[in-house]
Length: 121
Image (tube, rainbow, N blue to C red; front, side, top):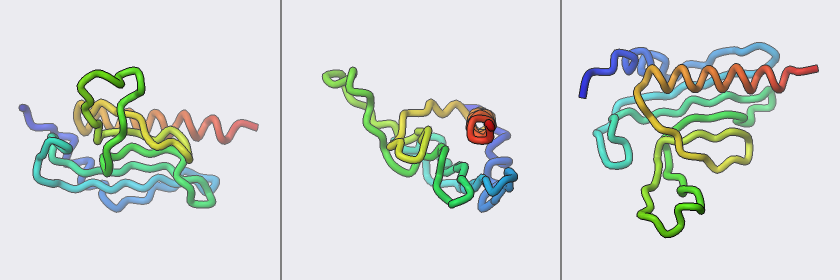
């Protein structure tokens, strides 16, 4: 597997709080862990967008497994640890982690989309 240069960028953002204006903010946490079946890329991460009251309204993380969709009820079940939460009450849907750069691109694109939706007059 080739080295992912964006990992250093992601790790450098650890513990960052990024003001998004209007009371919205992004929190980024990322650190290296031993690669495992749950975290084969060896990076534990949490990228979250919060509303002014502090509730998470978008999140990408790998802190826990999410159940596969019910349509795969009888198939071999693989629990996804990389996942995203699309709104406050979303328990998570699988996210296909390609590399750290794509994770950052996907998260910030979703954050921009969510912010444009919540800021509509």
